[in-house]
Image (cartoon, rainbow, N blue to C red):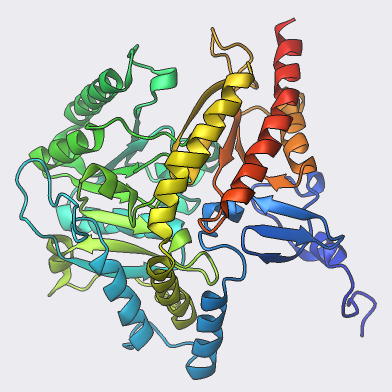
Amino acid sequence: MTTEELAPGTSRTRADDRYVFHSWSAQAAIDPLPVAGGQGAWFWDEDGNRYLDFASQLVNLNLGHQHPRLVAAVQEQAARLATVGPTFANDVRGELARLIVERAPGSVPGAVPGAATGAAPERRWRVFFTNGGADANEYAVRLARLHTGRHKVLSAYRSYHGSTATAISLTGDPRRWPNEVSADPHVRHVLGPYTYRSAFGARDDAEEGERALAHLREVVRLEGPGTIAAVVLETIVGTNGVLVPPDGYLAGVRALCDEHGILLVTDEVMVGFGRVGEWFAVDRWGVVPDLVTFAKGVNSGYVPLGGVLLGEHVARTFDHRPFPGGLTYSGHPLACAAGVASVRAFEEEGILDRVRTLGAELLGPRLREVAARHPSVGEVRGLGFFWAVELVRDRQTREPLVPFDASGPDAAPMAAVVAAVKARGVWPFVHFNRLHVAPPLVTSADDLEHGVAALDAALDVADEQAEALRR
């Protein structure tokens, strides 16, 4: 054993510090928690400190840590066939594609198929598998451009679509800025609906949806409808605020796209596979897109997997014309095996129903009760197991607790709140001035209560920080 090798059982922190280059971080400024294990909605560090995973890691661990069915599926598949190239047919890959297609938008009983403009009553789908969400969005844009012969793509300023070249260009938040040197030059951004901080002066959700649609229509007109291949939207904006679209907004986007031969691409990487109690969140509004991207919850991230659902009308473009793209690990058998097990677990364990029920009857009401007690909470919003608690200095002015894209001392008030949450054994998802609540979909009612109680206590710190900033 060399001097730098670690003996069995030794903390991995030293090896991580020495050899791992971490994403989105100044390497000298980070101190990652060394995670030793997890079970269900909980994980623990090497010192035995336990945390309720209110972030589902990166909003991907939908079935929780070490779900026995997923673990067994990966083990059994590895023993049978660990890997095979994407040019071969593979039973588990085909089975997962079938399961996804049968649950795709417009295919589920009760969904409203097609657009408001009278599309066919049934949409058939194909699945192109990727390694994750970023490359799913990358390929969705490529497919849209090749299908339409157009080059421009519209996406929202408040969005995150991944960090590969086109995906980071689609992204609207500040993570795009330092990456613009290699940006896709044909992406344009629009303002989506955000009633609490309306850029349109709207008084309620209905008016916000109408004005956001009018804004989008004007951008389409000014950019030239015949130049636009696709509109790419997170069905529910994730990292940038858990922004639930007003009723009618997505249907309006669908109609606008149909009017001009533009493809509608919905990014379901975060909110697909049960996060809000639907197989795909867009089902809640009865809108059927042309392309749907997914990842994360499809197999809870046990093995990297993502994909694009292609409407048959897009897939037919490549019946006699080769599609110029592919990935070595597209539809990896281990990842697909976990995906098949996940879909079956969802149905046999009643995951969608429990998310709808607990989200509407426990998580949402309890978060709103907590918010009412804390003047630092400006708004609580969300669906299912996907919520945001937006923190402000003043409820009247709605000034955020910390500035937009704050860092260093400017971010200290939010850092103090986050530290208070973690000190109570709960690990939140945090972005700017918001605490996001996105626990695994298997989290028990008692654990949800525990997590909300921890947030309640930690928000006392937020109140103190807000009061100090008002002085």
